[in-house]
Length: 545
Image 1: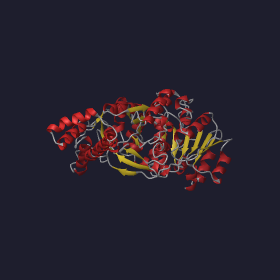
Image 2: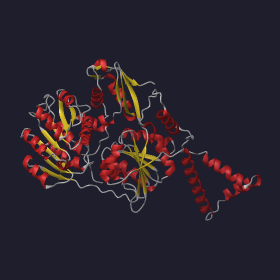
Image 3: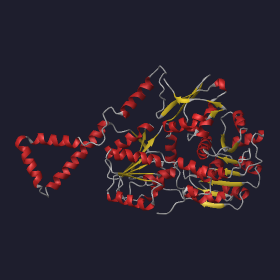
Image 4: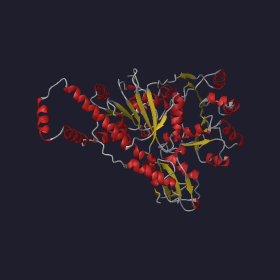
């Protein structure tokens, strides 16, 4: 297996490495491996790479590393074709800068109050991500200072040109200091892009990453909307219903891998883990066990996805949606190989449908939505498994003659009918059921509660209209000068949640409510407990009905 460059091996700060590890970034993608060291050296880059290959980290990490914290001015401008991409980029950068004090990022785009953006630009922003049109608006108003710009990034340059931003781009590149570093990324390379590169880039290094092609003919791809708290039980149900001989479950962090392995083993499954902390010789040993069928389930991070080469792998479960679209290709490509069929399930949280759309676009595929298996479906699957097991024993019995079994059967027949004996044996087999989930388990109860919440007209329920979200109470409000944007800014600056993932915000006179994805609850509750919003101390707790 080809050795991949790890983020911990890069010449970047320990604070950046810490944030990357917490976010589940272990090994670089090809575009990151080939461009990050070059950008860190200060060279210009022309990168040809599809969306979803990890471009944001490819240019974002060097941009953050190069920030001079002693300067209070803007030092990097990142141009993006749409507001959605600008928001997405800013969210990623804020994850990276979690432990980088003084490195603040801001996205600016049309459709939002320019006065609010002007105010934010005065708050010590170091990196600005924006659409060319809105960047130009601020340049004309003299509200965006370009004197200390050290890096300009053009992300999805071909899209910006297709949208008519060529003149704006050329104006921006003409106005920034000549000695700045310029990084250009594009999915395609046409004459107009090459002309811009020739005019505004200095001895650029060219990097081209071929798009990954996903062969999906034999892979059934299914997305399941599920709350974070329901994921573990959903894993059990999918395994029980599908009954795979070999399966791989992918998680984004080592911590989750270890937690899930413990749960699987407690439920009687033969399972092993693979992640970056496991030595290579141990990895090979575990892979051999999976190939031989000594273990049924492998739980892994993306760091080992490319190295999983196992025939007859029937099932892949994406416990977390991968950090990059390219990782999805590597993950589900482990099944449906050599003419065999396979299934790939992906768990989808409250506001993750946009990520699924990006995966579908990148991989030129379609992910169909399915439902969590019911307890009844599990019983049916269990029945099929028992029938097959018994039939296999019967078939083998024709070839062998077990004298002890014959003696036991003769004694049983002396006092019982064949039907009575068969029922008793089935009861014995069923009593060994590993997963004891009642017909009205937590999943069914949660589903009923969600329906009640949607049907309620009292407005007293604290359950979000969107599954997977919880409501938090903050003891600051309008009288403290707090606005919704202040809450978003504080949360995204101090925790792993991005602005687009935050749900509804309601700011009242003396307090506020904010909805956040359940998976961020622990991080936000712990991190924000001693933080301030606009200089105001506050208490944070789960909202009460």
